[in-house]
Structure formats: C-alpha cells, structure tokens
Image (cartoon, rainbow, N blue to C red; front, side, top):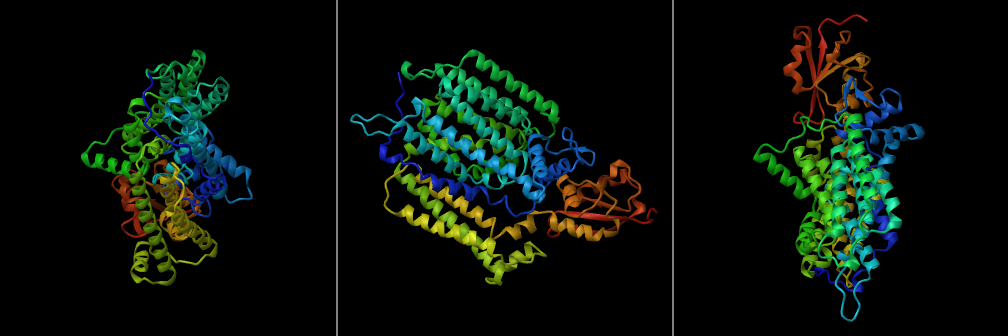
Length: 577
C-alpha cells in the first residue's frame, strides 16, 4: 500500500522561473570570481602552478612534482584540463585560460543539480497528493518547479561561493558528483531508453571523481547509489503499477566493476594514501565544535530545509527522491569528518542537500516561508550595505573608522577607482532592490519563491565582493604582493634561492609572481647564497645547514606581522659563481 505523500500542491503553485531570468541569474553567480583576479592562497595558486608547469613542459603530466616533492593535493584530471586550456589559448593570460575549464565545471554542477532534482521529482513516490476533483500539480510542472528550487538552494549555500570559483581539484570533484547524481536519478526513473546515456554519464562521473583526488569517495558514492538502485525498486510501500522497473543485472554489475576500476586506478595513478596523516576524525571537543560550526554555516540555508524534508517525508525514506541525495550527503559528511573537517570534501554534499531542500518546500507553512524571506532580506541587505560602505570609505576616506580598519588590516594597499568594476555592482544592487519590491508584492504563490531571496542575496554579495572589493581581496588573499617584495629583496640572487618549509602555494607564488629560481634545501644545493624559510621550519633548520654560516637578513610578512611571514637568510661568505 502506498504511503501518503505529505505534499499538497495545486497547479497554480508550480509556475517555473522564466528561463531567461534563470540563465542570467546563473551567469551572475558563475562568472564573478573567475575573471580579473590573481590566484589566491593556498590551493588556488598551488593548482595554477601545477597547470602552468605542465603546459610549459616543466612538470610531468603523470607524476607532477613541485621542486622534487609530490603534490599536496594529488589529482590529475583538473590539472590536465587547466594545462590543456593554457596550451590551447596562448593569446590569453595563463591565469585566465586555466580557469575556463573550471567555469564549465561550475556550470555542470548547476545543470547537474537541476536535472537530478527534476528526475527525482518525477518519481511516483515524490508526487503530491491527487485532489478529489482535480487541480493538483501536473508531474512535469511539479518537477520543473522543484528543480528550479534545488538550483536556487545550491546557489544560496554559503560554502559554495569561494570554493566553486577556484581552480582546484575540489571543483572538479563537485562537478563529477553533480553529474553522478543526475545519472543516478535517470537510472532510478526506470526508463530503458535513458539507461544507456545514464550509464555513460555514470562512468564519466565516477572516473572523473577518482582522478580528481577522491577515489574512495567515488567508490562510496558509486557503489552506494548502485546498491540503493538495486534495492529501491523492491522497497515496500510502492504499488505494483508505480514500482520502478529494476535495473538489469548486467548493467548493475558493469557499473559496479567500472566504479571499482575507477577507484583502483585513481589510487594507483594519483598516489592517494587513503590512510594518510590527513585521515582521522576530530580528536578533541574543540575540533568537534569547529566541525559543527563549519557544517552550520557552510551548508546554510539548505541544511534546515533538508532536515525538514527528512521529517516530513520520513515514510518515504526508501524512495529514490530521498534515499539517493541522502546517501550522497552522508558519504560527503563522513569523508569530511575523516579528514578532520575538510571543507573542500564537504563541497560534494551540496548538490544532494539542495535536492533534499527542494522537497521541503511543498510541505512548508506560509509562516515559515515568510520567516525565510525576512531573514534573507535583512541578512543580505545588511551584508551588501557593509560592502558598499567599506568600498566608499576606501575611495573617499569617510567614514573614517572603516577606512582606518582597511589601512590597518591591509598595509600597503592603494585603492583605485574602476568604472568597469563599479557598473556591475550598481546593476546587481538595482536588481536586488527590484527583486525585494517584487517579492513583497502580491503575486501568485510559487514553490520556489522562498528560495529566491536567499539565492539572489548570496549572488549579490558574491558579485559585490568580486567587483568592489576585488583589488582589496587580491592584495589580501594573493601571495602576489609578498612574492614581489621577496623578489626585490633577493634581486641579486633571483637565479638561485634555497627554500625550506614553504608550502606548495608559497613556492609557486615565488616562482610565478617573483620570478625566482628555487631549490629545496634538502636537495643539497650548496651554490645558493640566499635562503627563504618559514618560521615553523626554523627548529629543524640546523639538520640541513651550519647555522654559523648564515645570517638573518629580514622578515617579509604577507600582510602584517600577525599573518604569514617568510624569513630571508643570507650566506655570510658568499659562494663564488
């Protein structure tokens, strides 16, 4: 016997968002952050250095290393894509060219989430209650509306903004996870015509995940989804006429073997150590508190809606529209927890959370929807106002306190006016004001209306940061200023500089921004007269050099003394060339 659906939705509530508006909305979120900025620390600039080294023939495409050491984030697919783009587009700056594949990856993430939610919402168990005299939402319109809502929930997620606009393996993994969610939803539909294309997408997604540095997660998501797809068609509670056709055994075995092969190849080729030093749950209460805070803000506002979905649809937990996205969320949560709260591992949970959040909307009370609207209005309007006030203070010096705070936190930063950056910010702010007026107006109800303001507010604030604050963020989050100061201090030694204890990102920045030729101290290069050391590595410095042969020259901070600092040492008796 069918379990009753908690969704009661009339046809009038399933109007879809205008396609042009939705496309412009996605572009406004997608493009800012990929255009006109320097690579940021740490993973962003480190990944760019690998791509540039591959494109220029300085690094191996199969075993890339930075100064003779394995990469901090072992992956191949995202580095290959960035390097191919740099080679194929020599007329563009390498930073710009390397980002183009990642723009496509974020687009795949948005599209994959939309289509996954659409397929899941068409499941018989996901449909709303049928009315006695008709008028309930049609399956297609209902699915489109929830897909629009899932896309808005994804864009509204606070943790997506920065990490999805960096050229790192994490974004490649996110795109592949969204593609796998779509392939799983298509297989769950039970349509024999769609199985072949869904199987192809499945293989691409699992192999992409495995070669993006997450082979174990690829195996967990792939095999877990296959297990659910094999069990869900026989789940109790579905009438025989609505039961999903079981997948052919040969298809299940083929996809399982492909997934296992992808995970094995990813472990073997990328050299990922599944039980390395980064694997282990939080060991103290403070670490667990930090993890809980990360989960709370990173997945906001999707997680409260997802929890509501699990409660209201608790009788359909074994239905595809709940079970499949729930498994992807749980797998990503476990992966992040085992990596001591790695926020990049948590990215993979966002498409599943967005799908779950969309299914909360048909069951929300009007008062809850109004609360979401008011919170989004106040929060994002306040954030946008702060961004504008600080920008005005940077340009004019008034108000004095914000201007003084900027000068204190970003010493050496010289603000400059740019009309090219101001115009998009003005247009986005005007669109936000128009949207507020539209939202408080009297319009026919639509399920996605509760997520319009959170998604639009998140997009507004991200766009303002990537226009009004872009020079300031480049100064504060890039290693460029620090690397250029290092290059000035080491001008006479730029052809041979020893480094010790530096991260991969710092090494790449000194090479790319500073134009320095670096060698690791452990390599035993004895002809260099300059040495750059991180303060954390000073304790072990005596194992590599005789300290009485070197003198401390100066410290070069990234912003100020409380931030990252690199120390310059110079040989007392210079080695002759």
